[in-house]
Image 1 (cartoon, rainbow, N blue to C red):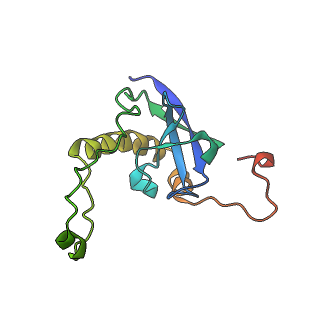
Image 2 (image 1 turned 90 degrees about the vertical axis):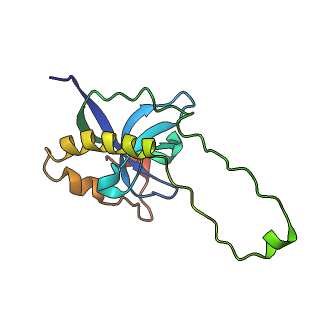
Length: 148
């Protein structure tokens, strides 16, 4: 039997996935936090988030010990494509920006992490709905005085 560890759930405050609940996995050397949705539950992939943009909650997710050693700042580094030559013809062409596909290794890593998280989330009643729900504050609510 694998040892288990408790991973806290957090709410994202800003960015593309603001209002989503995520599972905190580890702190990276740069100070950023490694979080995931999991992707199958609320669409948040493995990503880095600044500590200022999360609110920790009292919800904990019990997971088997995950091997998170390969997830570091270099793992998330963007690969830049070589710049196209700037010509007049290229400027007037009606070309759409081609979205770069994720490497198969990143997709496999996401599926492996999600598989472990989903297994433990489904054991706890209503936790999947909680993670899929969104978070928001109303006027007059002060986040540091609330109990999450």
